[in-house]
Image 1 (cartoon, rainbow, N blue to C red):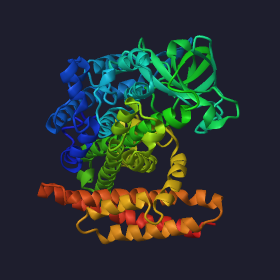
Image 2 (cartoon, helix red, strand yellow):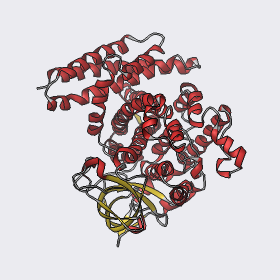
Image 3 (cartoon, one colour):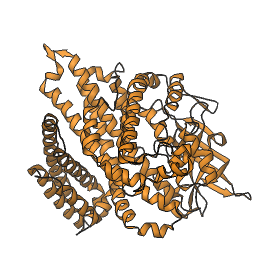
Image 4 (cartoon, rainbow, N blue to C red):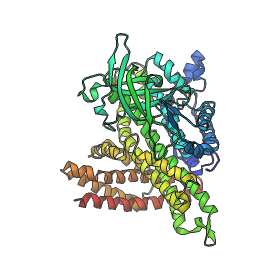
Length: 582
């Protein structure tokens, strides 16, 4: 793989970071108008808050320097080990998962950077970065190695403990995640119940001392075994209520990897460096997180939203890897007396990867911004002891969280699907060489495939988002108002953008008139495709007026035009499928 700084040496990512993101509002919402954490440091001299910024400028300096360090480490260290970690596969022996020495070495090296706990609050020893910075982190990590990216992003699930756990749990578990002493895993899926979490059968029985004992089996649990000598804490969904109690009978428990049995690991198409475990709980000790009965509705929702954004960012990272590796190969490989990059058909494939990647980035970072506009405020209200009912009525939480609940499944769906298509195009650029294991691109293709499946399949996210889209686009619905506000920032929308809007409105009208639920579900993905590409087109066209350098603006205008033309054509074909499905 290319060895350079995956942040500072990526011109488009730099342009997006420096010119297209509204950092002022993001910093304001993350740190609070009074820069609360800096005040804590001023009053207590607590070293955990030492890096808390006191101004917008300090915050930006912190974000930039951290992203530069992350880009350097993943671009020059992790990327150069990716192929080795993929080929020196994990082994399972006598209940233990054995990692290649290169994986252990790179993990320990990463621990020394101090960058691990990027999403954890400073209270738990983390960096307390906005979701927007966390998304860029994940883009950089996924470009270098999707499997190792999984390890790091899962570790940041410790934010759920720091948000809802007791002080003792925060100190025992979340603070250790911030330094990499302890990894984290989401233990939700069961052998007979994949995305159907309402049907979870693992049982937790309360003991006299207030602890619980868990019995059951979980499957497809990434990193559930820990990593070498570093244990994992499993955020486990289990039933405390009646067997047929649905979501209300589910709670989340903190279970150490030393208290479970790893029954085996999956032999997978890709992600060879990331263990996917079958976990057996046999009267295993567990501590409850928060309250009984809120496991699915409150705590798991927080985990899945975080991982959806990570998954969307992973699609962007895969697209960037596909683009840069394709450019390098196309400029070196000669056929018919010239480089293959000079062949129009090949050049168009590479250009398509580039514009699709930037569209994914814009949608994912807009989703992260929406999350930043309420999440930190909501957490501060929770920490202040406000009741859930009161928090839900808060206007800021109410508006932005509703918007986020629509955008997160859309960003996850779109970026995971398009990210895989980009790696598919990259294999085609390489030709026969891309189908061999001689180049990294084959691994990238294999690894990108899982992104459309884990953290909820694309079909699950279509189902989640369709209802929200139809409701939000009704009359003066919030989602319609949001789209109108994006459009208002475009000085002169192109005819192709307006055509997308017209076709989208027609599709929504037709979808509302479909009475048969089976038909509506069958054609729903067409509406999802239209909406995600329309929002991405809005964001693309909106970005043009903000680009300062004339040469860069010209390049982006060209890419943007090609993207919205593609999207207008795709929108029309989707409408045909909705109209004429039999």
